[in-house]
Image (cartoon, rainbow, N blue to C red; front, side, top):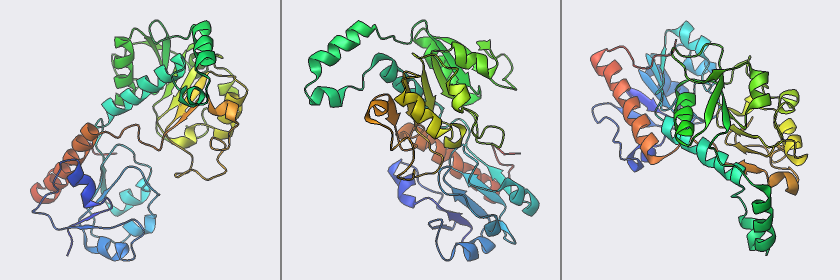
Length: 319
């Protein structure tokens, strides 16, 4: 009998220098494995990546599961109501990707603000014209700009710290900010109107789905940039594509999509060539680095071991 079912390949852990606990009986499966449901009936813990297709609530009915451990922070793959009904504890690893995510935000903000994404133009023979245009435009760095964080959890705070190091000022929108939060607390619409960089750091909930829609994109300054490394459904992708095509904002970096992988007809994939020059797309890797993976994987397996072997209360318990 497998004590633990893991929906992440063992090779992922080993390549990051993390060896899963040898005193646990672990089986590795894909989410669509034919025997997954049967394995879960006898297993005590399920380990899953934070990113991937939703898992059907029926998988968790009538099992022996005590713990679902996410090897990241995201929680939108599981039906939390079903887990609660079945008495299954849910835990994640909060904060493990903070540094990687903050690096993503800062590096892409600078790429968009400074116009660094000029490789295609230069390869096409446009070196002189591109340089002349960028010099004439007096493109800005982060120093002295106002960076607006929509969500000031641990990730938002990590982004704020790094932006401050580069001379930026911080504003934030958060209905329940952490105690002692630094920066200007603003209403969302005011933040969008005033900030030079807007970075999203909030979960996908009913209340946040479509939060950044056409009307709110229309509030942003024409020389502002938007960065979404949170969840795809938070931003209206069609509205964002239109804003970029019209030059209504300077640029956007998008790491997450409403469906993943994005469909071929996703507006951000079919965007005009003019709009595409203002857009950076990445495949949900903002929080992925070797350092982040080591921390996430190590803490996840430590948690599983503590719960199953030591009957300890899980760390980063999700309520």
